[in-house]
Amino acid sequence: DAGAVVFLLPETPAEISRQHPETVRPDSFEPLENPTIDWIRHVGGAVVRTNISGKFEVYAKPGKYNLLVISKVARRTNSSRLSKPLVAFISQYFLPVEKLIEDQQYHWQSLDLENESVEVNDIIFE
Image 1 (cartoon, rainbow, N blue to C red):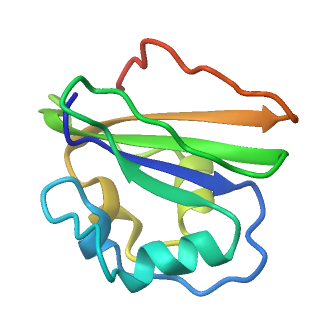
Image 2 (image 1 turned 120 degrees about the vertical axis):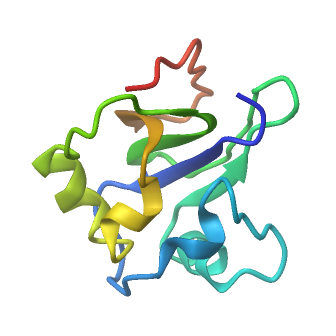
């Protein structure tokens, strides 16, 4: 999924300052001089886009994170609501939550990163 947006977000942010998601959505991503990306880095997370092959690399300190990948091309076919745990987690970082994902497919999973590299293969979008 070339151009998907990948968020590696600490399980608990160092501080809460909810950002508007407009500049980090797949269809309106601004990679340079982006205060939202800068803030996410400040609280220990990362935001990147997948390359033309759909691959990505993210570097982070050891800790507990949540990985959220929002597809650039795949849309959800049903209008199901986001799960309450996902909304609660995302709302620590973004408001309004629905504007971050909108009708795009996404993948969300918890990661416990140690001092080694972790590979995430074959992400399945919901």
